[in-house]
Length: 201
Figure 1 (spheres, rainbow, N blue to C red):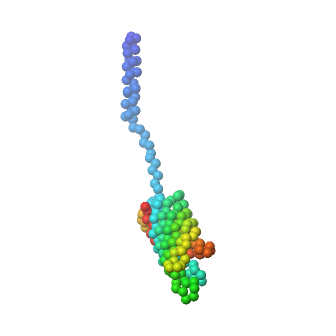
Figure 2 (spheres, helix red, strand yellow):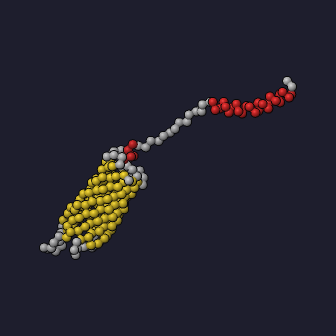
Figure 3 (cartoon, rainbow, N blue to C red):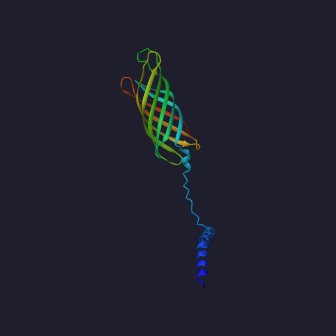
């Protein structure tokens, strides 16, 4: 074969071979890559990262020689910190009458209020979530007329349970032991017994 023809064939092969190989690679089906989809538990929808709870019930208020049950309401907001832990910001409000200190005196109408910040530890069960926690903040007692009015520290220890109704709504029941400091410096043990609804937000 003449040298010129050999050189021409070599040049043509060098120019056409890459295009042919590329076309062959395009026609060859590429292997499928498997997509790994991680599904969260269907129960996670019942326990969103933020919740607002509206609770009503009774405050068992300690007073000298007796305990009284006052009607009360509470509003509590929560943020998830982890799978087992939530932060809580709450406020409560109760109305009632305390016994008169002087014999023959009139009972004193009083308003009891708290504002607290706390942490809750939840058990992440599928259909129910029991929890315990601790909270600290301020307690205020405001009597009508010439009664007592003061604001002092308070510490609370809630124990409760939540039951889901839907992805955005759940039931909540709770008992909360409060150690409310009085004007004298002593602590009164008041117990909240409440139930209500929790909403996502």
